[in-house]
Amino acid sequence: MAGLADWYAAHGRHDLPWRATRDPWAILVSEVMLQQTQVARVLDAWPAFMAEFPDPGTMAAAPPGAVIAAWGRLGYPRRARRLHDAAVVIARDGWPEDLRALPGVGAYTAGAIRDQVHDEDVPAVDVNVRRVLERRAGRLLTPKEADAAYRRTGRPLRGRDRFLAIMDLGAAVCRARDPRCDGCPLRRGCATRGPLTGEVRARQAPFEGSFRQRRGRVMARLRAADAVAVGELDAEALASLVADGLAVVTRGRAALP
DNA sequence: AAGGCGGGGCT
DNA sequence: AGCCCAGCCTT
Image 1 (cartoon, chains in turn red, yellow, blue):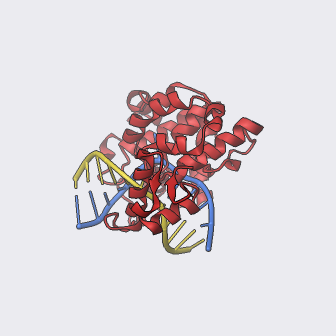
Image 2 (cartoon, helix red, strand yellow; image 1 turned 90 degrees about the vertical axis):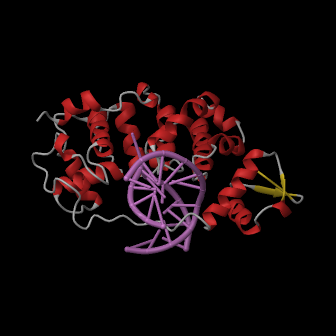
Image 3 (tube, chains in turn cyan, orange, red; image 1 turned 60 degrees about the vertical axis):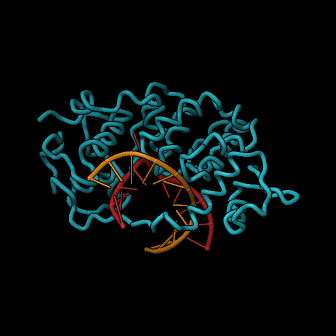
């Protein structure tokens, strides 16, 4: 069986448009969009979004609401709000040494950007990478253990290629459901060769009828119009959006900030 | 450590 | 009718 490097060369997602650039802004946008959102949906949204906000200065000069509107139905609109906040920071101060100083950028996203932009070789463990590492190890891993396992995986790949190869393997082969172990380049040395016993994921409450759905409906109204009479909207959901900086209310009318 | 936060595609 | 998704932030 060929190694991970050969598998990645043949089966990696080399078609994804944000992989064709090393522009940190373009990659930051893609990573934030990809937080808890499938690749296929980001693929639909990223090009037009980048055309509207090609650099941090352009986004910083726009009101947050323009970014929230452009975010569309990607979900978790607070990501759009934080991305605008990040753009303001970058436009004013430049890129911080520690990317986690940017709103909406945590340990994973910071590592993913460093790997992809500068070809650094730092662990970036998302749900896909974690699944690969834990199944290979045969047990659940703490964050520190996962970082150590990451460094032992995929050699001689390093940096950007190591990150993307493990990521793609997790998405296409070492899948959450129905893993395709027969075609896995890491089969040799894998402890489980299948789902890990006790591999559980926090289950989310049903969306139908939820407060999240109510918030989403108000967001959709605000995206579609310049302003909406407060009386037409779900008051609790609107208050929650205002608290998150996703809506403003002036003189009885609600709008994007 | 746990809970909140969209929305859609796939089974 | 669930399951799962390139997480992050607050409590």
